[in-house]
Length: 199
Image (cartoon, rainbow, N blue to C red; front, side, top):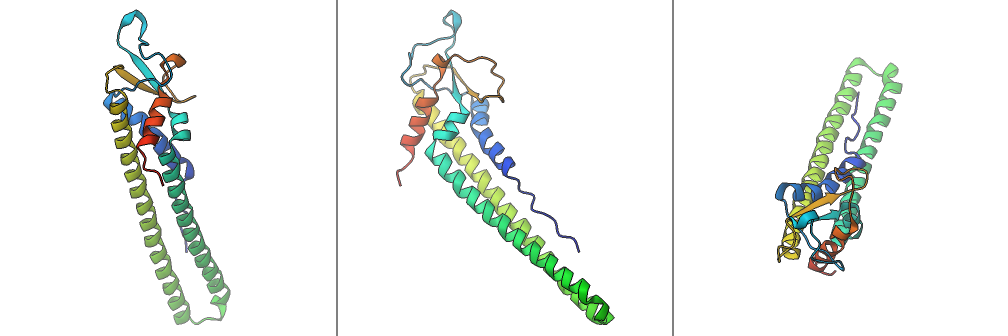
């Protein structure tokens, strides 16, 4: 009998969550203002004002993001352990069945195999259910993060200081150069954390 391995991978979740901040900014063209910097900074020639948010810093310092990510990681690890444990138990039962097979009648062998197949099917259904639950929770988390960021950007940029705000991530951004004078990450993080209820 064949049992499939858990398909949820650690990196996929991190990549999905990391992309939330970039996606909501790209989709909505929202803007933010600076913290501790000259709020009158403009693009060359006095045109539209631009700014950026460093996604790595945002994820590292946004308390709600870190707490929820830790919680989801724990649930994912528990699901992985549960699935791995059940698969190991099924493999052990299969080995025992294979060892006993020479001494079993045909009817006994067929009955034992049918029982093991039924257990494997139940395990597969449970595995798929656990994965679906995790995916639903991750999707809800992503939607929640996007909503929080959108609301915070509106609040931070209520005075319309910036026409555009871009996401920046080292090694994974279309921005080839950035001037730290346009970095509004600190203010966005502060606003996000201030809006999160204290425990």
